Image (cartoon, rainbow, N blue to C red; front, side, top):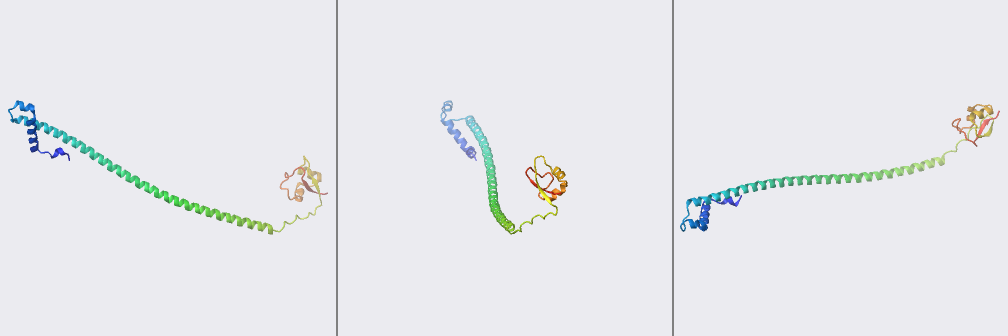
Length: 194
């Protein structure tokens, strides 16, 4: 509340009289100590106008103050909301870091277990290979055979024609051949001897 509002009209009248009594211009127009009612009314009217202006200014300032206080309250609420969001994000971050650490430990344990399984499997396979019976030699063919070394330009068909046998007979005598095209220069093949 403004200090202007506390003023009442009785003190205003006294103040007006004091101002008039001290005003040298008014003192020249009137006999000593005489003040007209009109002069008092003019001074009072001026003071009322000043008071009204002061009250209007006070009202404007009060409205601005109210707006500022409202803005401060709004910003304080926003700051509080942001603090709450930051705290929630910090809590979620902590939860994620904890979960990440758990996953890391789980992954390391899983990798260690897989490594141990791999070692055990490798050891089992090595033992099985060492203990495995040697492969049986290929059965001796009842068909007499002779050996022939492949030279450039040979095909299994041309070799079969020259040996007077079939490609299938040559393949049966050479179990390492997977197909008729599976020959190379310098390779030794068994062919039926007829």
